[in-house]
Image (tube, rainbow, N blue to C red; front, side):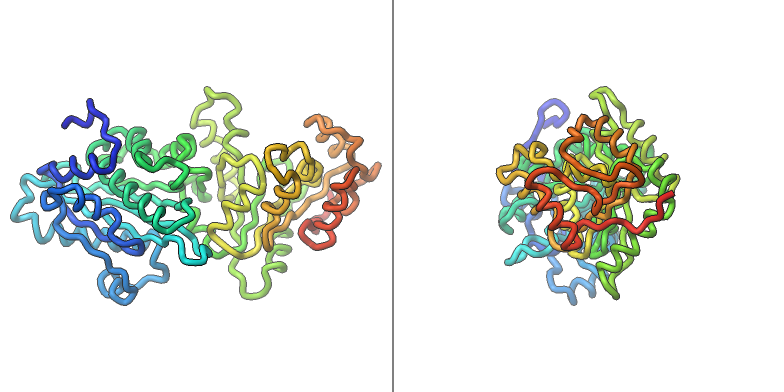
Length: 445
């Protein structure tokens, strides 16, 4: 069957198509969620045409003996070790017998599905190393990180199995069309059940691929809600960067802010670490901006995103690009990776908006529900002051009724000097007095 002219989107069809392809042969190794991918190839029949070996080194000691010791078992380092080992064995053992007509591959995944209490990070690493054609001297490789959104372990395992089949199929038959490859990853499961927040490709088939654009494509296509760039403007896995660390996140526009308060970041980091207590890891600091704020029109290009990222990276910052509009979505996102304190650096001029009822009309619980989602355990707003005239100008710019707030007539507006009109001021005062909203100890210039 010609996959270029006849689209295959069912996992059973994909698995059978691969099994019947005489040029593909390799191994599958899976850790943590059973043989979910391999089972598809066995259940559709003709698996002997594709699978040289299928295994699961579930026990940690056994896994270490095969792949070497590691500090974490669900991480990219472990996945790469699995691919190194399994691909090397396939080629070593089979190249003499069938290397002339066979494109060898090794697929691997290491996954943490939902535990009984649902308290763990439910995610996994998945990858494939493969020859693009029989006899290829250098292998290609695709690695992805996936977050699983189903609330039941069995559903997560089901989604994982389908995703693995889709990845293998895309690597074999859509190698030269990354848009089709990415779209096909969620065939049969949809983007609501899994989120792919990082992809890494290597090898001769990808020599002209821009990893930055490939990861932005995840965000644009709805496969991911946020992607992370390091200080060198390269995509990095959020789970590796944020893992069990306190997080300091600043969103919006940054240049003028750091001119006004050059010591803001260091002051907020000290403030957050005081909350975290002794023994906590160093805080992960990121600048976050919404994709919608960068791309103001539907015709905007990826180059605009890269330009903004490059400008912000000049300040040696890690950049999180997301499609989140509300702060409470960020809380839920970051809580995947850590239970340590989270601090959001915000302008005092943003506070009236955060506690405005109209903003949350789509939530059944309104501002109370939004606050409960935002201010989960150890989440704080670190508020920097704004000069009185600028505060008034900003509220006027966003068409916020200035009569809804009271603030000093000169000097700087702080969280404690700001008063909201109406009953929401009671909630506001509670958040301040309980230490959830904190004025940042920065010197006004």
